[in-house]
Image 1 (cartoon, helix red, strand yellow):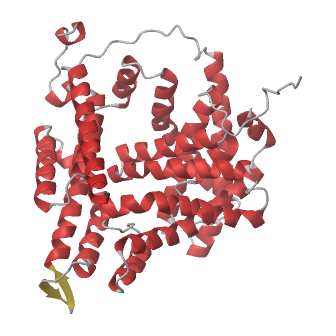
Image 2 (cartoon, chains in turn yellow, cyan; image 1 turned 90 degrees about the horizontal axis):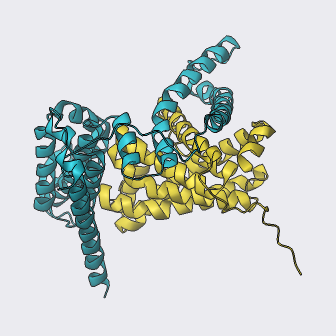
Image 3 (cartoon, rainbow over the protein chains, first blue to last red; image 1 turned 90 degrees about the vertical axis):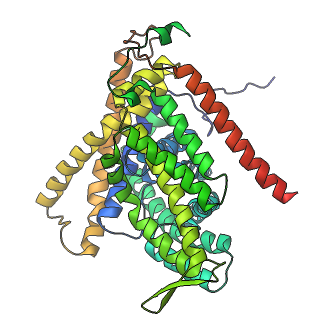
Length: 198
Length: 260
C-alpha cells in the first residue's frame, strides 16, 4: 500500500492564512512604491508588478494573483479609475510568475529573461482586447504609442498594432521586473522565505 | 421593508445614504454599459448620466482633479485617432500640416466619453465613502473578515512604506548613494533603496502576522461593531447585479451573433 505525503508543498496550496493575509497588502505596497519610482525617474517602464512577482515567488500563484488583482482595484479606487480594468492582466501575471517560479525558471539569471518573455506574452494577450476597447488600441506610454501610430499608418490592423505596442512595452518591463525580483529574492533573509513558504 | 431598512438613519448628504456596495455595483454597470455600443450618442448619454451623478453628489471639484490623471492619455487618443484612425475619410482641420479627420476625432470623442464616464462614476464611490465605512459594511454583509482585512490594510500599510522609504533614502544618502544627480545614477540608486525597503516591508509583515495571531484574529467569536444602515441597500444590490448580468450577457450575445 502506498503512503501519500499530504504535507508536500503544492504550487496551488492556498488558504487565506494569516501569512498570506499580511503578504498580500505588503505586495500591493511594493507595487505602489516600485511604480512611483519608475514614474519619478521617468523610466519607460511601469515596474508596478514587482510586488506581485515577489508574492508569487514567496507564496505561490494564488496569493500573487490576488495581490495583482487587489493592487489594480485599490489603484483604480484611489488614483486612476481606468487601471481597475487591468486587474485581469495582473491576475494573469501573478499566476504566470507563480507557475514559472515553481517550474524553476527563476533559479538562475540565465533563465529569467525567458520567463520575462513568457510573462510579457501572457500580459499582452490579456491587455490587448482591453486596450482596443478602452483606448482604441493605445497603451498610454508615449514611445509605445508612437510605434502603434507608425504601424497603423502603415495599414497594420489595429489589433496587431495594439498587440505589438503592448508586447514591446511588456517585454522590457517584465524582463527588468523579473531580474529585479530575482535579485531581491536572492537577497532576502532565508527566514523570510521559509516563513511565507510554509 | 426589512427591519434594517425601517430603522435607516438618514445622513445629511443623500449620497451617504447609499451603501458602498451599491456604489461599486454602479461602477461595474457603467463599465459594462459603456462597452455595449460603439456609438458616440450612446457614450455621450452614459457620460451625461455619470456627470449628473457627480453634480448631484456635489463632488465635481474633486472628480475634476481625478480626471487630471487621465488627461494626457485622452490627448494622445485624440491625436492618434484623429490622424490615423483606419476609417478616416473626411479632413476636418489641418494644424501644422497635420490633417485631422472627422471620423477619427468622433471615434476619439466616443472613447474619451467612455473613459470619463468610468472616472466620474468611480469618483462617486471614492469621494462619498470612507475606509472605515467600507470595511464595516463589507463585514456586515458577510464578506469574510480575513478578506476585508487584506483589502483595508493596504490603505494603512502604504503610508508606513512611504515613511520607511524616506528613512532609507536619507540613510543611503548619508552613505554616499546620491539619487539626485543624473538619470544613470538615479537608476543605479534604485537597488540600494528597493532591497532594504522590500526586506523591511516583508519583515514588518511577519511581525504583523505574529501580532494578529497573538491577538486571536482567527477567533470566530468576533466583537460586533455598530451596524450601518442604508436606504434600500438589499434591493439596490439585487437590481444592480441583475442589470450587470443583463449588460454582460447582452454584450456576449452581440459578439457571438456576429461570429455565427
